[in-house]
Length: 125
Image 1 (cartoon, rainbow, N blue to C red):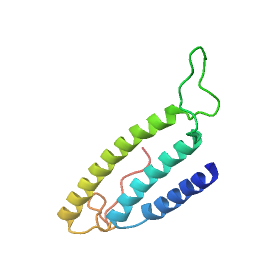
Image 2 (image 1 turned 90 degrees about the vertical axis):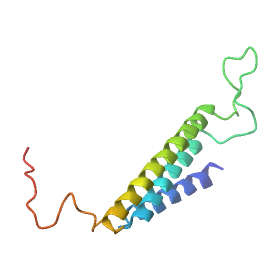
Image 3 (image 1 turned 90 degrees about the horizontal axis):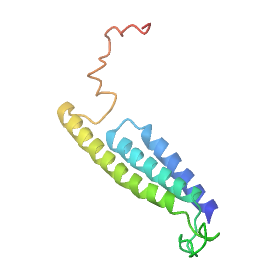
């Protein structure tokens, strides 16, 4: 089960990198969201996939049973989902605001901070 999940995580990474190289804002934002999902899937796969036994140590034992799932990656992923959703919401609002103000969603045309044709700042600081 770990091999297909690792391949799916790699597919998420590849698709997100492809979308992050886009010049339009919406595919760029979808690439950020897909990258977060790929990382979550990778953490879940690395934390051992198992559902045969609950992650509870029996009374008198010092550790859970050998085939149980690790609850720490699951807790980390739940936190990462909430943080990723809030990051996506903030980026979506910034993209909508920027594209409405500049009347474009092309990142090359949104270069107000670095206008073309002007002298660049000194890099020798």
